[in-house]
Length: 164
Image (cartoon, rainbow, N blue to C red):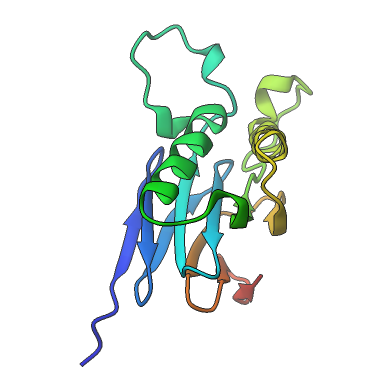
């Protein structure tokens, strides 16, 4: 009997997982899937980040999991509480696509690129190395991370599965 579960993470959400379970998110278009993991303790977390910066919202009560600047610190805190060592954390990233063509070159329409840049900046600020990434393009992605192998499986529509 296989007791392995797949923990699913929705849009603007995050969660953590330990061996033997895996963690998955679907529907990464311009969103960025941020996987942080501690390979020695076999624990990982995944945030499905929708927007780059919480400072752009006018709401008082925000969903912290929605923005790169707020979700990544929450994910780190959750991993450390669950037993990960912050100094051992590494990152793998996927998503940040440009899903639609716009005639304008406005920064607002470049949300995938802005999300990718915001995630990189936050991880650099927090001194977490990005081990590998699959960012950009114009295809949606589904990703699944296994904390035992530390492999991130990436599926794109009409493309072969990739592991980073």
